[in-house]
Amino acid sequence: MLEDTIAALATPPGEGGIGIIRLSGSQAVAIAGKIFNPRQGPGLAASRSHFLRLGLIQDPDTGETIDEVLISVMYGPHSYTAEDVVEINCHGGALATARVLQLVLRQGARLAEPGEFTRRAFLNGRLDLAQAEAVLEVIRARSSQGLQAAMAHLQGQLSGKIKELSTGLTGILAAFEASMDFPEEVGPVDQEKLQELRQILAGVEKLLASWEEGRLLSEGLRIAIVGRPNVGKSSLLNALLNQERAIVSNIPGTTRDTIEETLQLGGFTCRLIDTAGLRETADTLESIGVARSKQAIEAADLVLMVIDLQDGIQAEDRRILATVKNKQVIITGNKRDLAGDNCEGLAAFAGDNPYVAISALTGVGLNELAQRIRELVLGGRVSRQADEPLIMKVRHRDALERCREHLQSASAAWEKGLPEDLIAVDLWAAVNYLGEITGSTAREDLLDRIFSDFCIGK
Image: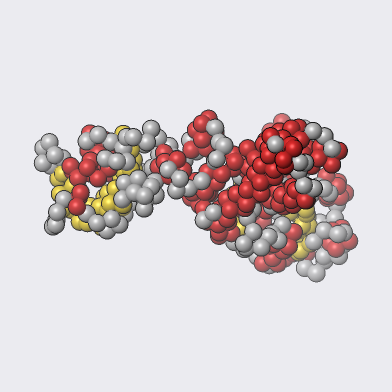
């Protein structure tokens, strides 16, 4: 796979200021040199690494000029893939980039598969698997905090911790192997190794404890806006987004399906979900909407329960509050502009839940509501130090959970005085699951699955 030269469009297709054709492989410079005519100086093969050169892309068969470009050569191993890489910076028109890519393929390059450039970087040892996955995390980051965490992964923060745990575990395993192979000379494994095993287990559990924060940064905080019909849920969604996203009317039951939009709040992505009014109904369509609302509540990290301050607390409000009692809830009293100072009972109704009185129509109280959401996010979830790694991918969490199970099993077996070969089996399994994260023990089918999520030019 690594013997041929691959090429692909590395920028989004369509019109833009620039379009980049990327080549990687042993023949990348030779292939690009066949179609590049420099404005001055020697041919491409004599170019210095990591310097831009101006010239024309021309069809070697017809002499037709396709585009005027800037081209750069990055010789391996000092390139993204650790191979020779050429990047052709074309004008961003769809036709120009397509014609240049066709020329490159005609000269002997092969169209890259999804994620193949990053896969080559992994196979050539420039990135481990966790860092390779972080490339996609950086691309897909939806908040400043998520981007910061993804960049930390790309720079090896998580990989360094995994390798540290793996090295310690391998040392313990080596002691067991020596004890089993040379029992008379080495003797039983020192009990100090058991304490080392417990410390490694604690390190794995600490990483697993960061999963909820990592999920928050990668996926965003899921916020369901709930309440009985006509209390202003859709108006609140529109006010927070500062756009008319949902239809608003004074007819109860207007919203019959969930509506989802994203909002940046304090460096985090919030996924706002406007739900249908929760009530018993004989209307078939509305009942489907109510069912979907309940599903949204179940999946939500935070619930904004909206009540109508003008109407006051209703029995239906109390019933709805009971259904969300196991969630983090902010009681949001709406229509403050109509209710005036008539907000009595809001605090009593909220109980231990935070509450705020707002007007979705005038915007009064929205800043306070945003602050309440931010406090819950920062205060309740984000407590990690900046230099501590965290888990952002389900695959990493699953591997660590399996690693933890085997470490717990090995520790329990050790304490019970069970045979060393049984303990070693669990230690080997734990090492393998750590290796799945960095790629040292990853199977081919796992690599195929991971890199298939990438775009073709990355």
